[in-house]
Image (cartoon, rainbow over all chains, first blue to last red; front, side, top):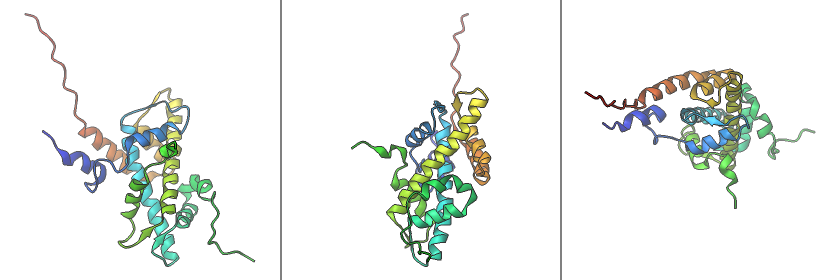
Length: 109
Length: 107
Protein backbone atom coordinates (compact mmCIF):
# COMPACT_ATOMS: atom_id res chain seq x y z
CA UNK A 1 0.00 0.00 0.00
CA UNK A 2 1.41 3.36 -1.03
CA UNK A 3 2.15 5.86 1.73
CA UNK A 4 3.15 9.06 -0.07
CA UNK A 5 3.32 11.13 3.10
CA UNK A 6 5.76 8.95 5.03
CA UNK A 7 8.84 9.53 2.93
CA UNK A 8 8.33 13.19 2.04
CA UNK A 9 7.49 14.07 5.63
CA UNK A 10 10.60 12.27 6.74
CA UNK A 11 12.77 14.31 4.44
CA UNK A 12 11.37 17.80 4.59
CA UNK A 13 8.52 17.96 7.07
CA UNK A 14 6.04 17.75 4.21
CA UNK A 15 6.74 21.36 3.15
CA UNK A 16 8.37 20.56 -0.21
CA UNK A 17 8.62 17.50 -2.44
CA UNK A 18 10.62 14.44 -1.53
CA UNK A 19 13.99 16.20 -1.96
CA UNK A 20 14.83 19.89 -1.69
CA UNK A 21 18.12 19.32 -3.45
CA UNK A 22 18.92 17.09 -6.44
CA UNK A 23 20.63 13.89 -5.30
CA UNK A 24 22.49 13.29 -8.57
CA UNK A 25 24.13 16.71 -8.35
CA UNK A 26 25.07 16.14 -4.70
CA UNK A 27 26.68 12.86 -5.70
CA UNK A 28 28.67 14.59 -8.48
CA UNK A 29 29.97 17.19 -6.04
CA UNK A 30 30.91 14.47 -3.54
CA UNK A 31 32.93 12.68 -6.23
CA UNK A 32 34.80 15.87 -7.04
CA UNK A 33 35.92 16.25 -3.42
CA UNK A 34 38.83 13.85 -3.88
CA UNK A 35 40.28 11.00 -5.90
CA UNK A 36 39.81 8.67 -2.93
CA UNK A 37 36.04 9.04 -3.18
CA UNK A 38 35.09 6.25 -5.53
CA UNK A 39 32.06 4.48 -4.13
CA UNK A 40 29.16 6.27 -2.53
CA UNK A 41 26.25 4.44 -0.94
CA UNK A 42 22.71 5.27 -2.05
CA UNK A 43 21.86 6.81 1.31
CA UNK A 44 24.83 9.21 1.44
CA UNK A 45 23.41 11.83 -0.97
CA UNK A 46 20.06 11.60 0.82
CA UNK A 47 21.75 12.29 4.15
CA UNK A 48 23.64 15.16 2.54
CA UNK A 49 20.46 16.67 1.10
CA UNK A 50 19.21 17.12 4.66
CA UNK A 51 22.60 18.26 5.97
CA UNK A 52 22.86 20.86 3.20
CA UNK A 53 19.39 22.16 4.04
CA UNK A 54 20.46 22.61 7.65
CA UNK A 55 23.67 24.29 6.53
CA UNK A 56 21.90 26.71 4.20
CA UNK A 57 19.34 27.53 6.88
CA UNK A 58 21.98 28.21 9.52
CA UNK A 59 24.19 30.34 7.28
CA UNK A 60 21.16 32.24 6.02
CA UNK A 61 19.98 32.95 9.60
CA UNK A 62 23.39 34.31 10.50
CA UNK A 63 23.66 36.30 7.28
CA UNK A 64 20.22 37.79 7.85
CA UNK A 65 21.39 38.99 11.29
CA UNK A 66 24.15 40.88 9.45
CA UNK A 67 21.61 42.32 7.01
CA UNK A 68 19.53 43.62 9.92
CA UNK A 69 22.61 45.33 11.37
CA UNK A 70 22.88 47.27 8.11
CA UNK A 71 19.22 48.22 8.55
CA UNK A 72 18.17 47.01 5.10
CA UNK A 73 15.80 44.33 3.81
CA UNK A 74 17.99 42.86 1.11
CA UNK A 75 20.64 40.27 1.91
CA UNK A 76 23.87 40.79 0.01
CA UNK A 77 26.85 38.54 -0.43
CA UNK A 78 28.77 40.66 2.08
CA UNK A 79 26.27 39.56 4.73
CA UNK A 80 26.97 35.93 3.92
CA UNK A 81 30.71 36.65 4.08
CA UNK A 82 30.36 38.43 7.42
CA UNK A 83 28.38 35.50 8.84
CA UNK A 84 31.17 33.13 7.76
CA UNK A 85 33.82 35.30 9.42
CA UNK A 86 31.87 35.38 12.68
CA UNK A 87 31.29 31.63 12.98
CA UNK A 88 34.10 29.26 13.96
CA UNK A 89 32.68 26.16 12.30
CA UNK A 90 32.54 28.05 8.99
CA UNK A 91 36.30 28.67 9.05
CA UNK A 92 36.69 26.35 6.04
CA UNK A 93 34.76 28.95 4.00
CA UNK A 94 36.93 31.95 4.90
CA UNK A 95 39.16 31.60 1.84
CA UNK A 96 36.13 31.24 -0.40
CA UNK A 97 34.26 34.35 0.80
CA UNK A 98 37.28 36.58 1.24
CA UNK A 99 38.28 35.93 -2.37
CA UNK A 100 36.14 38.78 -3.67
CA UNK A 101 36.80 42.28 -2.29
CA UNK A 102 34.10 44.12 -0.41
CA UNK A 103 33.51 47.41 -2.23
CA UNK A 104 31.18 48.76 0.47
CA UNK A 105 33.71 48.36 3.28
CA UNK A 106 34.74 51.76 4.73
CA UNK A 107 38.29 52.84 4.04
CA UNK A 108 40.42 53.48 7.08
CA UNK A 109 42.65 56.57 6.98
CA UNK B 1 28.73 26.31 -23.35
CA UNK B 2 29.80 23.57 -20.95
CA UNK B 3 27.82 23.26 -17.77
CA UNK B 4 30.47 24.34 -15.26
CA UNK B 5 27.62 24.61 -12.78
CA UNK B 6 27.71 20.86 -12.27
CA UNK B 7 29.87 21.65 -9.28
CA UNK B 8 27.09 23.77 -7.76
CA UNK B 9 23.60 22.98 -6.53
CA UNK B 10 20.84 24.72 -8.54
CA UNK B 11 20.37 28.35 -7.55
CA UNK B 12 16.57 27.97 -7.50
CA UNK B 13 16.72 25.19 -4.90
CA UNK B 14 19.26 27.03 -2.79
CA UNK B 15 17.27 30.27 -3.00
CA UNK B 16 14.07 28.50 -1.96
CA UNK B 17 15.67 27.17 1.22
CA UNK B 18 17.15 30.60 2.00
CA UNK B 19 13.76 32.27 1.56
CA UNK B 20 12.26 30.05 4.26
CA UNK B 21 14.44 31.82 6.81
CA UNK B 22 13.94 35.48 5.95
CA UNK B 23 10.70 37.39 6.68
CA UNK B 24 8.09 37.89 3.95
CA UNK B 25 8.95 40.89 1.77
CA UNK B 26 12.68 40.60 2.47
CA UNK B 27 14.94 40.00 -0.50
CA UNK B 28 18.08 38.10 -1.32
CA UNK B 29 20.44 39.40 -3.99
CA UNK B 30 21.50 37.07 -6.78
CA UNK B 31 25.10 37.39 -5.64
CA UNK B 32 24.17 36.29 -2.13
CA UNK B 33 22.51 33.17 -3.57
CA UNK B 34 25.55 32.52 -5.75
CA UNK B 35 27.82 32.86 -2.72
CA UNK B 36 25.60 30.42 -0.85
CA UNK B 37 25.82 27.96 -3.77
CA UNK B 38 29.61 28.07 -3.55
CA UNK B 39 29.53 27.66 0.23
CA UNK B 40 27.27 24.59 0.03
CA UNK B 41 29.49 22.89 -2.53
CA UNK B 42 32.51 23.59 -0.35
CA UNK B 43 30.60 22.15 2.63
CA UNK B 44 29.85 18.95 0.70
CA UNK B 45 33.50 18.56 -0.33
CA UNK B 46 34.76 19.34 3.17
CA UNK B 47 32.53 16.79 4.88
CA UNK B 48 32.97 14.16 2.16
CA UNK B 49 36.76 14.39 2.40
CA UNK B 50 36.58 13.79 6.14
CA UNK B 51 34.17 10.87 5.69
CA UNK B 52 36.32 9.41 2.93
CA UNK B 53 39.39 9.65 5.16
CA UNK B 54 37.65 7.57 7.78
CA UNK B 55 36.72 4.94 5.17
CA UNK B 56 40.34 4.75 4.02
CA UNK B 57 41.59 4.23 7.56
CA UNK B 58 39.04 1.45 8.07
CA UNK B 59 39.84 -0.14 4.69
CA UNK B 60 36.35 0.45 3.37
CA UNK B 61 35.61 1.53 -0.17
CA UNK B 62 32.11 2.92 0.14
CA UNK B 63 31.19 6.17 1.89
CA UNK B 64 27.84 5.62 3.62
CA UNK B 65 25.37 7.68 5.62
CA UNK B 66 27.00 6.86 8.97
CA UNK B 67 30.33 8.17 7.67
CA UNK B 68 28.67 11.45 6.74
CA UNK B 69 27.12 11.73 10.23
CA UNK B 70 30.46 10.92 11.85
CA UNK B 71 32.24 13.51 9.70
CA UNK B 72 29.68 16.18 10.64
CA UNK B 73 30.43 15.60 14.34
CA UNK B 74 34.17 15.45 13.73
CA UNK B 75 34.11 18.83 11.98
CA UNK B 76 32.08 20.62 14.64
CA UNK B 77 28.59 20.27 13.19
CA UNK B 78 27.34 18.43 16.28
CA UNK B 79 23.97 20.08 16.13
CA UNK B 80 23.42 18.69 12.63
CA UNK B 81 24.73 15.28 13.53
CA UNK B 82 21.99 14.40 16.03
CA UNK B 83 19.28 15.43 13.55
CA UNK B 84 21.03 13.52 10.79
CA UNK B 85 21.34 10.30 12.78
CA UNK B 86 17.63 10.39 13.62
CA UNK B 87 16.86 11.19 9.98
CA UNK B 88 19.09 8.38 8.72
CA UNK B 89 17.57 5.78 11.05
CA UNK B 90 14.04 6.82 10.13
CA UNK B 91 14.91 6.71 6.44
CA UNK B 92 16.33 3.22 6.83
CA UNK B 93 13.11 2.16 8.56
CA UNK B 94 10.97 3.42 5.67
CA UNK B 95 12.86 1.48 3.03
CA UNK B 96 10.92 -1.57 1.84
CA UNK B 97 12.50 -4.79 3.06
CA UNK B 98 13.33 -7.17 0.19
CA UNK B 99 10.88 -10.08 -0.02
CA UNK B 100 12.65 -13.43 0.19
CA UNK B 101 12.57 -15.43 -3.05
CA UNK B 102 10.60 -18.67 -2.65
CA UNK B 103 12.65 -21.85 -2.88
CA UNK B 104 11.38 -24.71 -5.09
CA UNK B 105 10.66 -27.69 -2.95
CA UNK B 106 10.57 -31.03 -4.61
CA UNK B 107 8.45 -33.76 -3.11
